[in-house]
Amino acid sequence: ANAGGIPAAGRLNWSTRMAFILAATGSAVGLGNIWKFPYITGENGGGAFVLLYLFCIALIGIPLLIAEVMIGRRGKHSPPDAMRALAKEAGVSRHWSLVGWVGVITGFLLLSFYLVVAGWAVSYIFTAGTGAFNGASGDDIGAMFGRLVGDPVATTVWGSVVLLITSAIVIKGVKQGLERAVTTMMPGLLVLLLVLVGYAMTTGHFAEGVNFMFNPDFSKLTGTSVLVALGHAFFSLSLAGGGMMTYGSYLGKDVSLGKTVLTIGVLDTLVALIAGLAIFPIVFANNLEPGAGPGLIFVTLPIAFGQMPMGQVVGLLFFIMLSFAALTSAISLMEPAVSFLTEKKGYSRLKAGSMTAAGIWVLSLGSVFSFNIWQDHTLYGKTFFDVLDYLTSSWIMPLSGLAMAVFTGWVMKKTSTQEELPNGMTHTLWRFLIRYITPVGILAVFLNAIGVMG
Ligand code: PHE
Image (cartoon, rainbow, N blue to C red; front, top):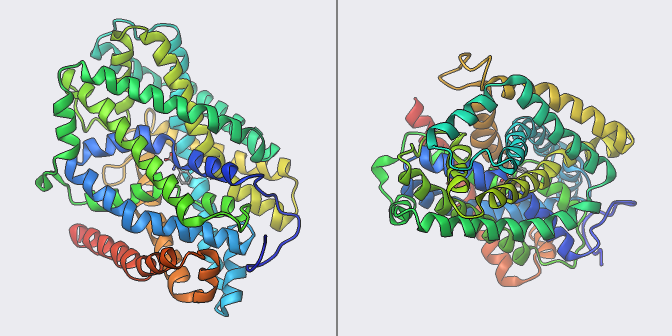
C-alpha cells in the first residue's frame, strides 16, 4: 500500500486511518476555535467577518489542507525534506524546501505564544475547581483575569507546565497517548460547549448573539479584517505550520485525502461557530465589550459558570477539556521541529525535543511579558504577543500557503497529484481550486491589505 511517492525506510506510521483523523483534528481544534475565533470575531464586528472567514475556509483552507497533507504523504519526510523530495520528482529547484523550513519555523513561533494562552486555560482549571467563579460579578471576573495575566511569574510557570507536558509527549512519540486524548476529550468538549450554548439561551440575549454572528454588516469591517479572516483560516486549520505536513508524512496511501480533510474542516468550523454561539449572548447579557481582545473567553464564560446550576463542575470540566484541546494542537506545533532534528541531524527524540523546548521557552517570555511588564512596549500599537500572532497568521502562513498552492497546482506533475487523489471528480475540483481560486484569493487579500495600509 505504498505505491507512488518517495519511499523512505523506518518512518513512524499511523496505525489506522482513524488515528490520523484524530491527530489531525486534534491539531486543528484548539485555542484557535474557542479562544481566538470569538475574540477576533468580536474585534472585527461580527457577521461580515464570519462570512469572510467561511469563504476563506472553503475556497482557500480546505484545498490547501489537501495540498499540505499530500506533500507530507508523498514526500515522506519532515517538511523541508518532503518538499525537496517532491521538487526533485518534479524536476525543479531544490530551494522549494524553503516552504518546509518556513513551516517548521512557523510552528516554533506559534507555539511560543500558544503555550502562554494554554497556560491561562490550565490555571483556570484550578480557579474554576475551587469555586472562585460562584456568584462572582462580571467585574470580579474581569479583575481575576487581570490579576492572572498581570503576574509574569505565575503565567511563566503555567506556560512552562504546558511546555513540559507537550515536550514529554512529543519526545515519547506522538502516536501513544494522542489517540486516546483526542477520542475522549473532543466529544466531551463538544458536549460542554453545547451545554454552554444552552445556558446562553437562558440569558435573554441569545437572539442578539446569533444576530451579531450571522447578520453581516460590512460597514463594521476594519481595514485589516479580510487579512485577519484569511490568517485565521490558516491558523484554525493548522495550515502552513508544518504540523499537517508532518502528520501527513506518517500517513499511508490507502486513506482518501479529500474525505478526510473535508471531515476535519467541517468539524473545526463547527466547533468555532458553537463557541461563538456560547460566548456572544453572555457578552451582551453582561454589557461586556465584544471587542475585548484576547481575554474574551476568560471574562465571559466564568460568568456563566458562576451562575448556572452545577457551574463549578461544568467550569472545571470545560477548562480541563480546553487544556487538552490546546495540548493536542501544541503537540502538532512542536512535532515538525523534532521530526526535522531527529531525521536530519540524527539527534535522539530526547535531545531534539529538549533543544526545541528550550528555544520555545525563551521566546515565550516575550509573550508572557506582553501582558505585564512589557505591555507598554508596542509597535504600531501591537505588543510582542500581537506582533508575533499577526506576522505568523496574517503574513507568513498565507504566503507559505500561496507557495504550496503554486507547487501542488502548477509545479507537481498532474499524474503525481492524481495518484494522491485517485477519485477523478475530487481531483478535478481540487485542481481547479488550487490552481486558480486559492492563489488568486490569497493574492487579492494581500493586495487589499497593502492597499488599505499604504
Ligand atoms: N489549529 C490550532 C488551533 O486552532 C493551532 C495550530 C496552528 C496548530 C498551526 C498547528 C499549526 O488552536
